[in-house]
Image 1 (tube, one colour):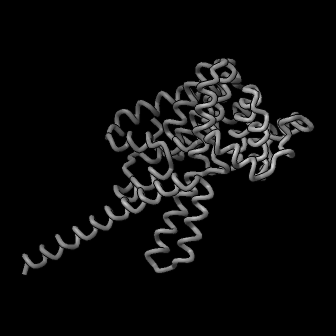
Image 2 (image 1 turned 60 degrees about the vertical axis):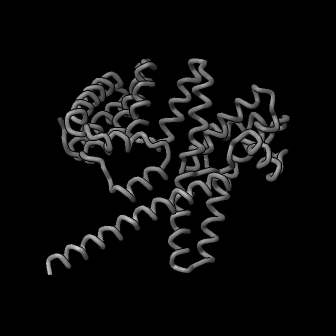
Image 3 (image 1 turned 90 degrees about the horizontal axis):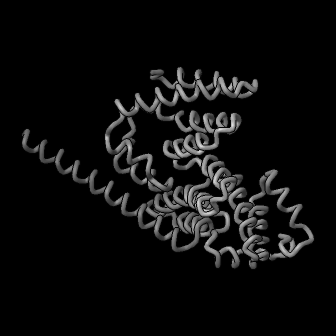
Length: 299
């Protein structure tokens, strides 16, 4: 097994070279072999429950909170870190050779090793759409709103839902989705194509005001520009600022987090952060008491 990140990175670079050269079968074969070796190695050396549990967390904040309390439980960081890249490459090679089932399986594995990788989520959604499985397509697209920190991923998710609402005969909501995507100010071919196609129709994003778009998205349960990862970091900053007596900064951070994910989600995140910090503080205080007792006993 290639048990260092450098060796695995070198092998992945070789496989990616095959893809660039159009040698898709060679790339797929190498990536399959790498995946088998990596999984075998992880099964033998990374069997701790915590290490598995870490990868199942659904949001970046839950990972942050867990690691603040427990530390990083992952072993074999050098192997685990590039596994999502390995499986994303395998998915691409599989699509090139026409094996869509293997591509879906590889993307699921990529998400397993990196739950925050919204690119793999959206690519997997596209494969389900090809199969006509709109439930999985929409479910994966919606999951991006809870996880994405990259505005390009949010834009793709909005485009997916815009297409869905157009088919569902909700042209105003479809237009609101495109307007929300445009507000992210990113360059995306799928978004540009969707806007061009909608121009001059009843789902033209230019025909929807910002406040109206926000109301329409909220009514459908789609947050505007949501990012749980960024909101969690802002709320951690707000908590730190509050403890330092910096009330203005604490308020500004909290309001920005609320704008990103909405008030209920922001309050939930804040309560979880405060609980994590309280537990961390209690653990530190307990350790200090134990140290003092030990010192007294030694005297």
